[in-house]
Structure formats: structure tokens, C-alpha cells
Image 1 (cartoon, rainbow, N blue to C red):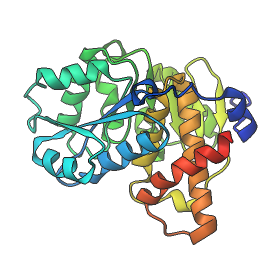
Image 2 (image 1 turned 120 degrees about the vertical axis):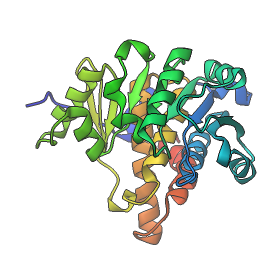
Image 3 (image 1 turned 30 degrees about the vertical axis):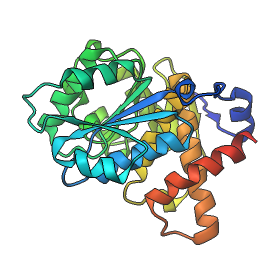
Length: 280
């Protein structure tokens, strides 16, 4: 059996607070989203928008060259940088500089090739980013990368299928124990379906949210929200809790207004008023 978890409430989050936003977009942090593919170019957009919607000040998208132009037009708020299509090619100096200067890097949304994802994770790990959030395909290949090649501040955002891959077994009946095991194994903060765990055994549970969140692209929004809170300067564990709560509560607000059937892009839009409600 796992140790008792702390239930996340508005009172807890208000007590934690958020870093002072300052008077400039630069004071609210810079997020870089590394991901996207020809098959799923929108995943990086959803994640990037979510990061901005929770208050991150600046956004960069590092995506395959084949989709960089169209994403730049679709999301004018982001700086867009092209990365190689081939797993064997290297990042150029401009991209490396952007990664080094980012307050949080999210890697994985929209990737659909294991070899490319592995090569990209190793490249990003070698840069020494401040905080790295991994999602989607990046979780499937994580066990192939030594922990020493990744930054100390590491956040994992698996769904249940990805959690089972990280564990190397089916999930059990105690989600807190499973998520805690992943956190210890990978020495990372882990968020999975509202359970957040640290490597040292501290856990929280988000008990808001409903079935409407089970829609295409919802996980990209969640990962982007976590990265956004991390970029704002929050501790990685608190960034994961804030992201999980805000994403889930945004789903509740949408379901109350429209019923189930809302889109992931609507969850992203709802993050801002949800955050205002939570801290207000």
C-alpha cells in the first residue's frame, strides 16, 4: 500500500500561490515545445497555446522543417524553429541557443517516430536545459536514455498506457503506488491522471475533472500547462500539480456549460479563466 496522498484543493493552491508575474513577458518565463510531425502538427500548437494560457510569457516551437512554415502562420504568438527531419542530423546553433535559454522545455507532443524521438531527446539532454517535461512518444523511449544525460528537473506526464510502459508491467489497483514507483525509478516528478508523485515519496491527488477530458489532444494541453507553470518559476512538483488541477478543472467548467464533446483547443482557451478562478 502507498502512503496517504494530499488532496489538491483551491485552498492548497492559493496557499502555494504563483511566482510574481512581474511587469514583462520576460519575467514570466520562456517555454520551448519540441515536437510535431506531418501526421500530427497540431499537437505542438495545443501544447504551446496551453503554456501561454497559464501565464508563460514567451513561446518557441521547435518542429520538423516540413511543417515549420505552416505552424508559424497558424500561431503568430510563437517563434518557430526548424529541426532536422532525419534522426542522424544535428540541431543548428540557433536552436541550441534557444533550448539553453529556455526556462522549460517540453518534448514529445506530436512525435510519431521512435528513432527520431530518441535522437532528439539525447540532443536536448546534452544542452543542459533547466527543466524538461516529457510527454507522449518521449516516454516510450525514455528507458533507453541514461538518467545522467537528462536535467535534474525532470517531469513526466504519462497516460495510463505510457505509465505501463515505464513500469514494464500492467498497472495495479493502487495508482498512487504505481506513479510513485515510476517517480523513484526515473528520479522524476510524475503526473498521471491526477496523481502526482516525487522521487522522495510525496504525492498529491487531483480529484476534479471528468470524462470530457478524454478527447484527442487533451494530453498535449495538459503537458503544455505543466511546462507553462514550470517556466513561470514554480518548483517542478508544484508545476505538475498546478497543471493537472487547472487542466482538470477547465474540463469541469466546459462540461457544465456545454456537456461532453468539447475540443482540446477549447480546454486550452479555458485554462486562463480557470486559473483566475483558482487564485482569485
